[in-house]
Amino acid sequence: MNEIRKTQNEKRNTKETIGNVYRVSRIASCVLSQLGFTLIELLVVIALTGILSTIGLVNYMDFNRSQVVNQASKKIVQELRFAQNMAQTNKKEGTDCDTLKNYSVNFSGNTYTINRLCFSSLPNVTPTPSLIKTDSVTAVTLTGFTYVEFPVLRQAPTTIGGNTMTVTGYNKTRTIIVDPGGTIKIVEE
Image (cartoon, rainbow, N blue to C red; front, side, top):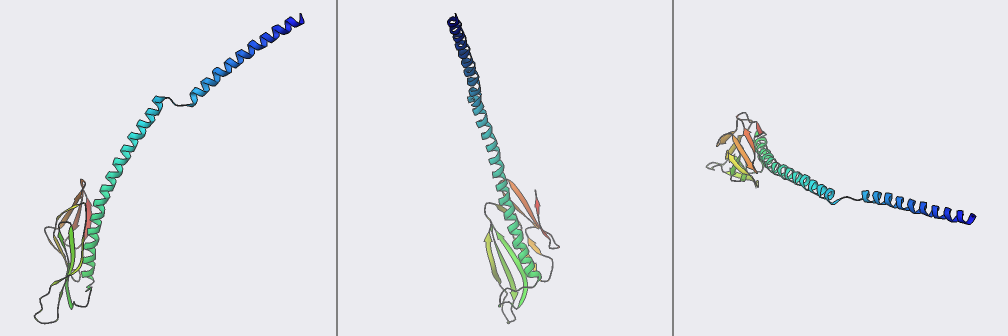
């Protein structure tokens, strides 16, 4: 009888053990299935990453293009201020200049030159401009004044083609203004 009870207890223990193993394996499979991602979840994440990357790239390209126009405008203003400063301080840049008349900046397309005009103390010598610098700006279009002259000793500047220059590129525009008082500034549009 003891043996029968032992056998019955062993059967019951075996059934309980099998039941526990079954329950544990079901819980483990549920937990393991929750550890991964479904295909739909992965596709949603990939799509969102692609959309955000595209938006970021477009904004970066727009910023870069805007900076090209900004830098070209700043470069032109810097060169105009250089010529203005040289004229205002009566700097002659070289030994072949007896009396300085002016510094000028000439624009042709995207290229500009900075010249100085001096008078000689020698008789019958016609003053001719001396080239100081030639440079250009790229990826933009320049429209407006083609010539700016800065006379010596803080006299009012002279412009040909109006007193504004528009720098345009990549659908971005900046306007450079040289006012009669000599102020040079950039205006965003």
